[in-house]
Length: 168
Image 1 (cartoon, rainbow, N blue to C red):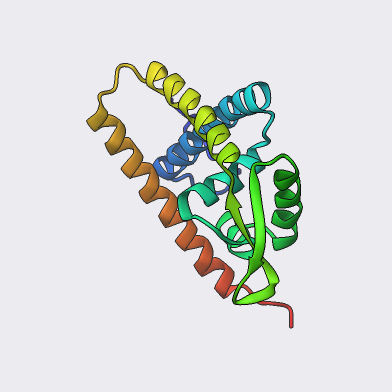
Image 2: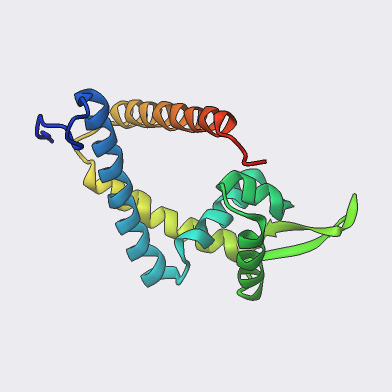
């Protein structure tokens, strides 16, 4: 991918390497969203946001809705509505938290686990086919680089949030 050497915003100096990375990440996000949309809606009926909740539960196990919301960077009320719908579909279950009965613990059901595994198995097959020219070492190296970029962006965002005035 070769970008034009002119700045995106007139009068603002262009950082070619950072802009190339930004364009690459943006292209990757769009490509992944297209794949997710096709697989989720046609095969499982899940929305991307639902799959995100299920992935958190699969990875980290039973937890409070607020913990899920924090991991996804959304408001707890958003996750609460999602969990209600996922529970109605039999993909998750809720029980009172023994430490605080006012709070519920959410866990992935066996049906939810099976549905998520089926979707990601399909993703994996499609990705493996699309990247057939890359061996495992190259894919692992690419994944490590992407993780490093993601962590750096998240950390930079935390610094920006801490430095912004709260309006109080």
